[in-house]
Structure formats: C-alpha cells, structure tokens
Length: 208
Image (cartoon, rainbow, N blue to C red):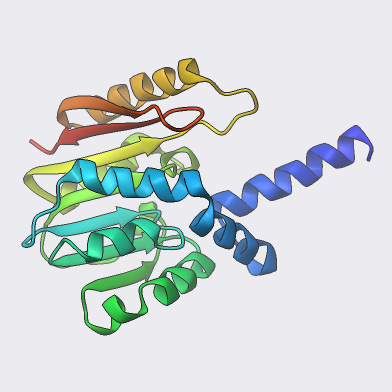
C-alpha cells in the first residue's frame, strides 16, 4: 500500500475509536469492550473511585459500557454518556439488566451538549476520551458543574501512540493535572497501573 493510502487508512481507523460509526464503529466497540488492557483499565478506575452504595456516578465517553458494568454493581445510580450512538447501543446490550432495573441510564450526547442529568453526582469518570473533546478545560468544567461540592473525578489515560512508554504516561498525567487545575478542581493526585504497557495513569481530583 502506498504511504499516502496507508496514512489515510490509519486515520480512518483512529477516527472510529474516537467517534465510532457504522460497521467500522461496531467493530471498534467490540475491540474496546474485549481488549484485556481496556477492561483492566476501566475496572481499575472504578476501584480507585471507591464507589459507595449511595453514590451517583457519571461516565463521559462510556464507550461499550465496561466501566458502567463494574460500577452498576456498587453504586446507587450510574449514568453513561457518549457522543456515539453505536457505543451507547453496545453499552445498553452489555448492561441490559441494569438498564431495565433503572440502575444504569444512557444518553447519546457530546460533552459540549450534555442533557439534564438530574441530581448532582458524587463521582465522575472519563477514560481515554478527553483527547477528542473540542475544549478539554471546558469539558472538565462541565463535569465539575455536574458534581456535588467535594465530588471526585477520575480521568484516565493510556497513551496509544506507536512506541509509547512510561515516559509518555507520566507526561499525560502531568498534563491532566494541569488541565484539571485550570478547570477548577483541587487536590489532584495520580495513580499508575504499571501492569499495562504502556502504564495507564489515573488523575483523581475534587470539585471544590
């Protein structure tokens, strides 16, 4: 394949993971929902949030619903939002029983236009999604407004660029801490999942 065609093909694949659509989007969602590193990363993030039985959790960019599935077993209510209808359909199938019971609610919407989501949330989560937002600081600010005072956000990143190492992960964490501070959060701290290659990082912070 010619370099130009290869570059366009790679770009098309990357876009499917950023905003899955059509058949290619369904394939991307299938991969995201089953890739070992993705599942481990999502469940790790839920563990870090230390969900309580009375908590309300918001996940922005919920993808095929792996983290929602883990959260629904612990929290009182879980709301998943994703800009991709393909992802929401997969999340609905994965969490069919919890959706039916009202423990999981799903919405198709971008971070730039979140719908009314009811009472404030105790916890919020964004896993490998802030990089596709038009304005990261504004998006983080939108989530902060949806949190109750003192509520916790967890923002997870696992660099996917070719040749990514722990150095890239550390830089990603530093950038997330900077963005969270700019968006008005306090008490940021970083946790690292070294078992993955490259490591996943999770920056947790509080809404003041």
